Length: 525
Ligand code: FAE
Image (cartoon, rainbow, N blue to C red; front, side):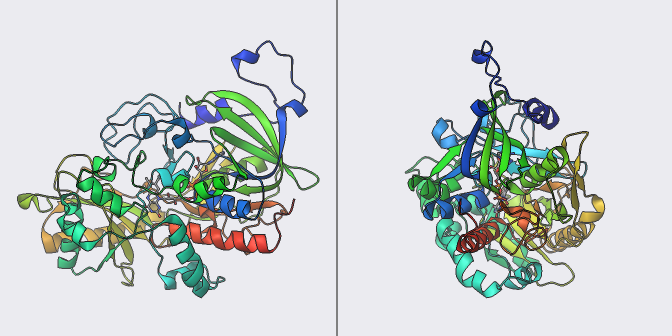
């Protein structure tokens, strides 16, 4: 099922109230009351923003209902699959895998943990399931450069972020750093060792990158004392062990309060602003094949959108189109790919063992060229955990976004339009060219012509950001302009880029917003 078919199939249409469940075919029509439920506070989406919001609200004694379109993997008992043997978790309702490369694997449609949103000039990968992106991401928890943070958020007090909200986010997410001795001896990190050595040879600085994968667990994996996950090729289709995804941290704590209800496989299609400033959501409960089982309405007094950048934009813009939801003109502005640009080199160390047959899926190193005014970038030294040694080095570059894009709604597709083309990534490509040339001149090797587009992955995006920017489309703490009871707490608050992998920034921002919103008594119901 492609995205359009899924949207059409699960689309409610305003006011249509009926069950799809075949067992109810003999039932008479239902009254509106029987098909609607009241929940005081609803959060849509269980990624970083949603998980922080849930915990802080529950701790404040509020009852919270969290709607998540993906599966609750832990509760379901289903397992995540490795990259070389894709199973149920590999793709959200697709017939073929949707990794950034090597999509030679057919899969049976299932509500998998990884989804890909395809636009003309960019493909955007997102996580689906209880835990959102934390289920499928590489776990890199990188602190943005303070100067850049100040540049993108001039109105925020950076000092308080670096002394309070970032450390809080690191603590709650259980961020840790690997032992250098382990990295030196672990054969699964040869790709990183080679990557760092060659970067130094080329005159670049490198840095150790903290992660939410438990490195003590990984050391035990290496010694084969516990089941392997990062060392068994698990990552973008989920990790069965080791990774401290949100279901193990924020969401677990929130559930322990007894005040959080998580409804998985619940897709919110759109919502309506009522005259009394409450909201009514049109919700579709689906099964693991994506087939609608039940359609109903949820009325709530306070609504938090935490559906991720693309999800929150989709909900707002569709609701504006269908239900005349009032929206500020800032919605959709300042969107960016966080400067994502994939690239790679071949013939790396080709005659002395390449980058290693077996590779950990968890990155631990980055090349930090941010201070270079001409070619400012940060590059993750990325693994290629496909069980083959092709002497390839992969890099996921993060650049500044000098030309942000815009998001709007296309009524014909019932989905988003993205105003984003090759001109938006041109400077990123110049940086990639400079980086590869400098690396190859110093170390040998060639651009990976067979990967991406002749070695340049301008259209690969793991980090969509912006579109509902803090203090432009919202007040200082995420309350949406023109609304009293509607809040946005996710990556869409960040204007186009954060200079590093973004989830630590999203988490810290969410902590900041929730603390202040609670202080202002914004969630009294
Ligand atoms: P997100 O985590 O995307 O959560 C949104 C949730 O809302 C999802 O669970 C959706 O299923 C759900 N949802 C959406 N629409 C609806 C709807 N209509 N009804 C119900 N539920 C809905 O949002 N970042 C890093 O910092 N470090 C990394 O190493 C890293 N690696 C990555 C690797 C991959 C393959 C990918 C895809 C991303 C990676 N990221 C990484 C990005 C990171 O996961 C992402 O920025 C955050 O997850 C975004 O957090 P949000 O709270 O914005």
